[in-house]
Amino acid sequence: MSTNAPGRPQIDKGKRTFQIVASQFNPQYVQGLVDHAAKELRELAPGAAISIRRVPGSFEIPVVVRELARKKNNNAIIACGVIMQGETNHAKNLIRSVTDALQRIAVDYGVPVVNVVLSFDNEDQARERCLESRINRGTEAARAAVEIARVMSELRT
Image (cartoon, rainbow, N blue to C red; front, side, top):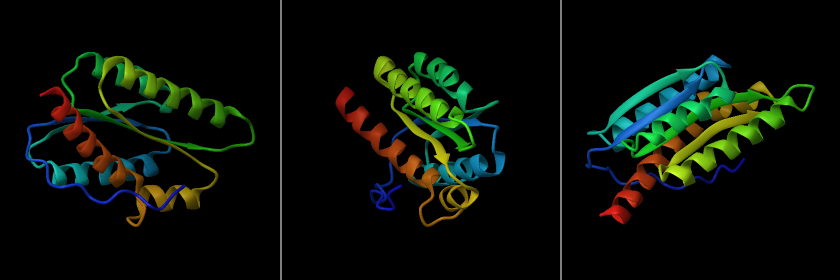
């Protein structure tokens, strides 16, 4: 994974709506992503409405994201989950399935979906990217959500 993320976007003073859909699996890591994403959203888009939806696991994230996208009243949706590699191919199959579904939803419904359903080989990787601040993927997701919401708003006006 790259450590070269885009810089922090400008404060967005628009009235935006952001949804975070988060897995309950691997809760400490997912909660780290959610906490960092929500904090960054509040700082970058102080007037935004931010809602968090919980689902059992990463596999259930796309169906809830689809339902939220279908309503067309969200500027961006952030999908948060953590999948740990095990001894079988299940994790690889799961991450590919979720990633493909999220991209398809974004394109089909025209609602930006920021994919932060992450796959890790070990707990050290998860800790570094979900709990710590240096390369936190939740923070990066919030920045991407604010920026893409701004771009889409400009395109639609």
